[in-house]
Image 1 (cartoon, rainbow, N blue to C red):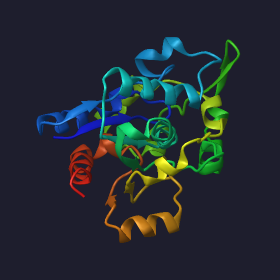
Image 2: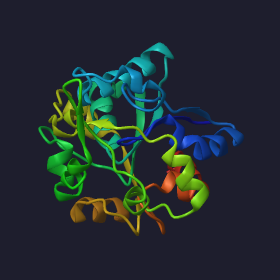
Image 3: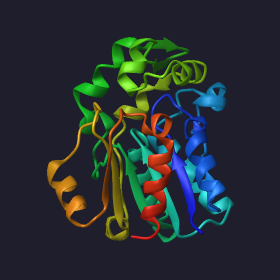
Image 4: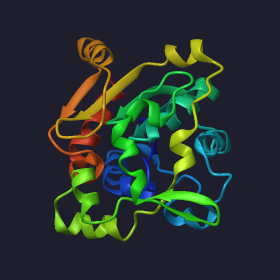
Length: 239
Protein backbone atom coordinates (compact mmCIF):
# COMPACT_ATOMS: atom_id res chain seq x y z
CA UNK A 1 0.00 0.00 0.00
CA UNK A 2 1.12 3.56 -0.71
CA UNK A 3 1.49 6.67 1.42
CA UNK A 4 -0.02 9.85 0.01
CA UNK A 5 0.50 13.42 1.20
CA UNK A 6 -2.07 15.71 -0.40
CA UNK A 7 -1.25 19.43 -0.48
CA UNK A 8 -4.06 21.86 -1.21
CA UNK A 9 -4.08 25.04 -3.26
CA UNK A 10 -4.83 28.69 -2.59
CA UNK A 11 -7.70 29.51 -0.24
CA UNK A 12 -8.38 25.85 0.45
CA UNK A 13 -7.40 23.54 3.30
CA UNK A 14 -6.92 19.86 3.87
CA UNK A 15 -10.72 19.64 3.90
CA UNK A 16 -10.88 19.81 0.09
CA UNK A 17 -9.31 16.35 -0.17
CA UNK A 18 -11.84 14.63 2.09
CA UNK A 19 -13.66 12.79 -0.75
CA UNK A 20 -10.38 11.60 -2.33
CA UNK A 21 -8.78 10.70 1.00
CA UNK A 22 -11.83 8.64 1.96
CA UNK A 23 -11.53 6.58 -1.23
CA UNK A 24 -7.77 6.07 -0.88
CA UNK A 25 -8.07 5.00 2.76
CA UNK A 26 -10.88 2.60 1.88
CA UNK A 27 -8.44 0.98 -0.56
CA UNK A 28 -5.93 0.51 2.27
CA UNK A 29 -3.59 3.43 1.64
CA UNK A 30 -2.15 5.82 4.22
CA UNK A 31 -3.22 9.41 3.57
CA UNK A 32 -2.21 12.76 5.05
CA UNK A 33 -3.93 16.00 4.00
CA UNK A 34 -2.37 18.81 6.04
CA UNK A 35 -3.72 22.34 6.10
CA UNK A 36 -1.09 25.00 5.43
CA UNK A 37 -0.50 27.76 7.98
CA UNK A 38 -3.01 30.62 7.82
CA UNK A 39 -5.66 28.71 5.87
CA UNK A 40 -8.69 26.54 6.61
CA UNK A 41 -8.94 25.62 10.29
CA UNK A 42 -5.54 27.31 10.74
CA UNK A 43 -6.72 30.69 9.42
CA UNK A 44 -6.26 32.19 12.90
CA UNK A 45 -2.49 31.82 12.39
CA UNK A 46 -2.37 34.16 9.39
CA UNK A 47 0.15 36.99 9.60
CA UNK A 48 3.02 38.75 7.81
CA UNK A 49 5.20 35.65 8.33
CA UNK A 50 3.02 33.40 6.16
CA UNK A 51 4.60 32.81 2.76
CA UNK A 52 5.53 30.04 0.33
CA UNK A 53 8.62 29.15 2.32
CA UNK A 54 6.59 28.61 5.51
CA UNK A 55 4.12 26.39 3.65
CA UNK A 56 7.01 24.27 2.38
CA UNK A 57 8.30 24.03 5.96
CA UNK A 58 4.83 22.94 7.16
CA UNK A 59 4.89 19.77 5.08
CA UNK A 60 8.61 19.03 5.41
CA UNK A 61 8.01 19.03 9.18
CA UNK A 62 5.13 16.58 8.72
CA UNK A 63 7.33 14.20 6.70
CA UNK A 64 9.98 14.23 9.42
CA UNK A 65 7.60 14.10 12.39
CA UNK A 66 5.71 11.10 10.97
CA UNK A 67 8.93 9.58 9.57
CA UNK A 68 7.32 9.26 6.13
CA UNK A 69 9.34 7.86 3.23
CA UNK A 70 8.68 6.94 -0.39
CA UNK A 71 5.74 9.33 -0.27
CA UNK A 72 3.51 10.08 -3.23
CA UNK A 73 3.42 13.86 -2.85
CA UNK A 74 0.43 15.52 -4.51
CA UNK A 75 -0.09 19.26 -5.03
CA UNK A 76 -3.16 21.03 -6.41
CA UNK A 77 -2.92 24.47 -8.06
CA UNK A 78 -0.69 26.65 -5.79
CA UNK A 79 0.18 23.37 -4.07
CA UNK A 80 2.41 22.60 -7.05
CA UNK A 81 4.71 25.38 -5.86
CA UNK A 82 4.72 23.87 -2.39
CA UNK A 83 5.42 20.25 -3.36
CA UNK A 84 8.31 21.30 -5.61
CA UNK A 85 9.90 23.05 -2.66
CA UNK A 86 9.21 20.10 -0.35
CA UNK A 87 10.85 17.66 -2.75
CA UNK A 88 13.87 19.97 -3.03
CA UNK A 89 14.32 19.97 0.75
CA UNK A 90 13.33 16.38 1.49
CA UNK A 91 14.10 14.47 -1.71
CA UNK A 92 15.04 11.36 0.25
CA UNK A 93 11.46 11.10 1.56
CA UNK A 94 9.59 11.62 -1.72
CA UNK A 95 9.05 8.76 -4.16
CA UNK A 96 6.80 10.47 -6.69
CA UNK A 97 5.51 13.97 -7.41
CA UNK A 98 1.98 14.46 -8.71
CA UNK A 99 0.88 17.83 -10.09
CA UNK A 100 -2.90 18.00 -9.81
CA UNK A 101 -3.84 20.73 -12.30
CA UNK A 102 -0.99 22.51 -10.58
CA UNK A 103 1.80 25.01 -11.02
CA UNK A 104 5.04 23.31 -12.08
CA UNK A 105 7.73 25.93 -11.33
CA UNK A 106 11.46 26.07 -11.81
CA UNK A 107 13.99 27.79 -9.60
CA UNK A 108 13.32 31.49 -9.09
CA UNK A 109 9.70 31.45 -10.25
CA UNK A 110 6.72 32.59 -8.21
CA UNK A 111 3.10 31.59 -8.75
CA UNK A 112 2.57 35.00 -10.34
CA UNK A 113 5.33 34.13 -12.83
CA UNK A 114 3.84 30.71 -13.59
CA UNK A 115 0.14 31.58 -13.68
CA UNK A 116 0.40 35.18 -14.90
CA UNK A 117 -2.91 36.94 -15.61
CA UNK A 118 -4.99 34.16 -14.05
CA UNK A 119 -3.61 34.66 -10.57
CA UNK A 120 -3.32 38.43 -11.02
CA UNK A 121 -7.06 38.52 -11.74
CA UNK A 122 -7.74 37.40 -8.16
CA UNK A 123 -5.90 40.34 -6.60
CA UNK A 124 -8.77 42.86 -6.87
CA UNK A 125 -10.81 40.58 -4.58
CA UNK A 126 -8.35 41.24 -1.78
CA UNK A 127 -8.23 43.31 1.35
CA UNK A 128 -5.54 44.27 3.85
CA UNK A 129 -6.02 43.01 7.41
CA UNK A 130 -3.45 43.90 10.07
CA UNK A 131 -0.93 44.69 7.35
CA UNK A 132 -1.45 41.41 5.48
CA UNK A 133 -2.83 41.47 1.94
CA UNK A 134 -5.38 38.66 1.62
CA UNK A 135 -7.24 37.47 -1.48
CA UNK A 136 -10.43 35.43 -1.67
CA UNK A 137 -12.55 34.94 -4.77
CA UNK A 138 -16.15 35.59 -3.65
CA UNK A 139 -19.16 33.49 -4.56
CA UNK A 140 -20.71 33.07 -7.06
CA UNK A 141 -17.55 33.93 -9.05
CA UNK A 142 -15.58 31.29 -7.13
CA UNK A 143 -17.74 28.52 -8.54
CA UNK A 144 -16.84 29.45 -12.10
CA UNK A 145 -13.17 29.96 -11.23
CA UNK A 146 -12.86 26.54 -9.62
CA UNK A 147 -15.14 24.78 -12.09
CA UNK A 148 -17.66 23.65 -9.49
CA UNK A 149 -21.37 23.69 -10.37
CA UNK A 150 -23.11 21.30 -7.95
CA UNK A 151 -25.09 23.38 -5.40
CA UNK A 152 -24.12 21.07 -2.53
CA UNK A 153 -20.42 21.27 -3.40
CA UNK A 154 -20.63 25.04 -3.76
CA UNK A 155 -22.25 25.42 -0.34
CA UNK A 156 -19.62 23.13 1.20
CA UNK A 157 -16.82 25.20 -0.33
CA UNK A 158 -18.41 28.53 0.56
CA UNK A 159 -18.36 27.55 4.24
CA UNK A 160 -14.69 26.59 4.14
CA UNK A 161 -12.69 28.74 1.70
CA UNK A 162 -10.49 31.26 3.50
CA UNK A 163 -8.51 34.31 2.33
CA UNK A 164 -4.98 33.54 1.16
CA UNK A 165 -1.95 35.77 1.84
CA UNK A 166 -0.89 37.33 -1.45
CA UNK A 167 2.74 37.18 -0.34
CA UNK A 168 2.67 33.41 -0.95
CA UNK A 169 1.91 33.99 -4.62
CA UNK A 170 4.67 36.57 -5.12
CA UNK A 171 7.53 34.81 -3.33
CA UNK A 172 9.94 33.11 -5.75
CA UNK A 173 10.72 29.45 -5.19
CA UNK A 174 14.33 28.97 -4.04
CA UNK A 175 15.73 25.55 -4.94
CA UNK A 176 19.06 24.27 -3.63
CA UNK A 177 18.97 20.52 -4.39
CA UNK A 178 17.83 20.41 -8.00
CA UNK A 179 19.73 17.29 -9.06
CA UNK A 180 17.88 15.19 -6.49
CA UNK A 181 14.59 17.02 -7.05
CA UNK A 182 14.42 16.49 -10.81
CA UNK A 183 15.39 12.84 -10.42
CA UNK A 184 12.05 12.20 -8.68
CA UNK A 185 9.44 10.88 -11.17
CA UNK A 186 6.79 13.48 -11.99
CA UNK A 187 3.17 12.82 -12.94
CA UNK A 188 0.43 15.17 -14.08
CA UNK A 189 -3.33 14.96 -13.63
CA UNK A 190 -4.93 17.77 -15.60
CA UNK A 191 -8.42 19.08 -16.23
CA UNK A 192 -9.85 19.54 -19.69
CA UNK A 193 -11.90 22.52 -18.49
CA UNK A 194 -9.63 24.75 -16.43
CA UNK A 195 -8.01 28.16 -16.22
CA UNK A 196 -4.65 26.63 -15.28
CA UNK A 197 -1.70 27.34 -17.56
CA UNK A 198 0.60 24.53 -18.69
CA UNK A 199 3.91 24.08 -20.47
CA UNK A 200 3.03 22.26 -23.74
CA UNK A 201 6.50 20.71 -24.01
CA UNK A 202 6.34 19.40 -20.44
CA UNK A 203 2.84 17.99 -20.97
CA UNK A 204 3.93 16.34 -24.22
CA UNK A 205 6.82 14.59 -22.51
CA UNK A 206 4.61 13.47 -19.63
CA UNK A 207 2.01 12.07 -22.02
CA UNK A 208 4.65 10.23 -24.06
CA UNK A 209 6.00 8.68 -20.85
CA UNK A 210 2.55 7.53 -19.72
CA UNK A 211 2.62 9.95 -16.81
CA UNK A 212 -0.32 12.18 -17.69
CA UNK A 213 -4.03 11.73 -16.99
CA UNK A 214 -6.82 13.93 -18.38
CA UNK A 215 -10.03 14.37 -16.39
CA UNK A 216 -13.03 16.05 -17.99
CA UNK A 217 -13.88 18.57 -15.29
CA UNK A 218 -12.93 21.97 -13.87
CA UNK A 219 -10.00 23.10 -11.74
CA UNK A 220 -11.18 21.72 -8.37
CA UNK A 221 -11.20 18.14 -9.65
CA UNK A 222 -10.66 16.61 -6.20
CA UNK A 223 -14.14 17.93 -5.34
CA UNK A 224 -15.96 17.40 -8.63
CA UNK A 225 -14.39 14.06 -9.66
CA UNK A 226 -12.93 12.42 -6.54
CA UNK A 227 -13.25 8.88 -7.89
CA UNK A 228 -11.33 9.72 -11.07
CA UNK A 229 -8.64 11.48 -9.05
CA UNK A 230 -8.33 8.60 -6.57
CA UNK A 231 -8.11 6.09 -9.41
CA UNK A 232 -5.38 8.10 -11.15
CA UNK A 233 -3.42 8.47 -7.91
CA UNK A 234 -3.54 4.73 -7.36
CA UNK A 235 -2.27 4.20 -10.91
CA UNK A 236 0.63 6.54 -10.16
CA UNK A 237 1.73 4.11 -7.46
CA UNK A 238 2.09 1.35 -10.06
CA UNK A 239 3.63 3.21 -13.02
